[in-house]
Image 1 (tube, rainbow, N blue to C red):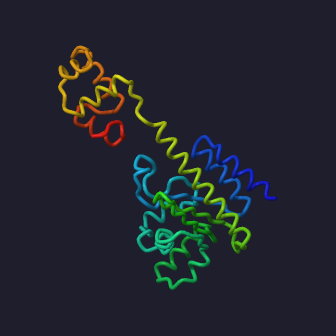
Image 2: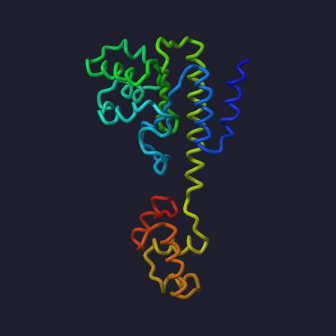
Amino acid sequence: MNTKLEEFIFYSQHANSIKELFAMYEVIMKHYGFDHLAHAVISDHDELKNGSALGLTVHNELNGWEKHYLEQNYIAIDLAPQITYSKAGFFTWHDMKQQALSREQSAIFNEAEDFKLYSGVNVSIHNANGVKCVIIAASNQQGFSVNQYTKDIVNLLAHQFNTCFLSLTKHELIQKKIPLTQKEEEILKWISKGLSKPEIGDKMNISSHTVSYYMRSIFKKMGTNNTVSTVIKAIKEELIVI
């Protein structure tokens, strides 16, 4: 019985935040020899439009490698993102090095070692809803190798982490929803239909002055300063449907 695995599966499902989930993930992955971790969303998708930008979502320090990688624009030539985007699966860096690499692609793996990232794996996960994610796990131990048992465990951990990550992402997006009152929501609906303040007042049986008061409150909560930008943001945030 693998107690650590069972504990992670149980507690990861009860994490209260992505930060807490990632901290749990770091602990158990260190147990299997992986010191550096990163999770990235590698596809654009409606469900994540208000969440993390494409690319790294959470990661611990990769010894400065992530900054160097982005500065050199290695993503344009690196084989790893090409593979992980095109198909799901478990890929070791050792396996990728055995591919027919260009001189530039080989240099990327060599440079990673200069940052003490000697060995690693990429787990590409293509979810049923269309969201593509990848887990990157690396070791700073020279000569580190991954046996089949560890591959199976790490693959399972990656899928568990990713499932919980996406679940928490949806939850945190819901929590961030702009808290409008019932009257503010109704006024916003009428604004989107092009009604004037007097017309809205007649609809709601309140004065134009009161409508103006609610509109100022809506602008403040939404960080806007006019009706056009407010309606545009409300549509984007799915507060109204045209």
